[in-house]
Image (cartoon, rainbow, N blue to C red; front, top):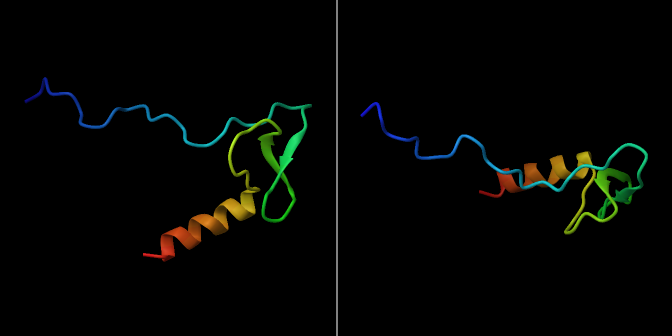
Length: 63
């Protein structure tokens, strides 16, 4: 049993978009239009940290 591999891989790829590099333009949040930490060319819905947190809370509480 000591030779078994773990069921889940130890490194899980991140589902979040790549963060913006310093000195580059940042995308605006699609909900509140505040600047985010993501680059302008980030695909998908881009949220600021506050809106990301609020969306996570809504998802956790929706059951």
